[in-house]
Image (cartoon, rainbow, N blue to C red; front, side):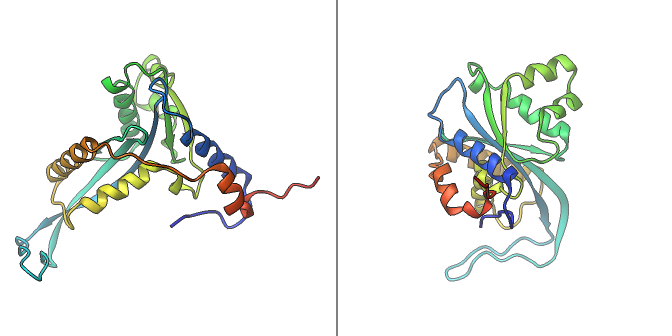
Length: 223
């Protein structure tokens, strides 16, 4: 379900067209396009073991459960290469974001990249300023210099392919995950399977499409 602003917005269409341009660049290992998104999942422990599935009956859970906190998940997804990684954290602060981005920049996979083209939403922690919250100035500047950042528009999270990949991950989870260790096991197995199959994203929506289908969002210009 697309979420779009209710009226004309030059800000929205600028960010939308900027991201659409990025998505239609040809693959270039020197400038890999990577989408980043984050979410959290409630960790729920069982009071009693679930009843296993049987012919004609799905697995059943007790209505009583124990809350074991939340797990924050940071998804990085390279759609043209069919590669993704989910980083688990206990929180979603500026420092957490900065550490995820540092791990991305320093990963062996991107050792030879001149810059990582990073697409993400406009959450207030999603910018180079957060690097200075986590690292010294020299290190923060080094990491920032390896990034080319593009933000999706506000009310335009559907333009972030990492959000789509997070949805695929969440559909793969069982109804309840008890703790961070269990979540890490699910992440590892899902990543291995998905990366092994090199599941890519074939993005079809273009700027010409947007100018027709979403023309009501474009400001009216006289002359």
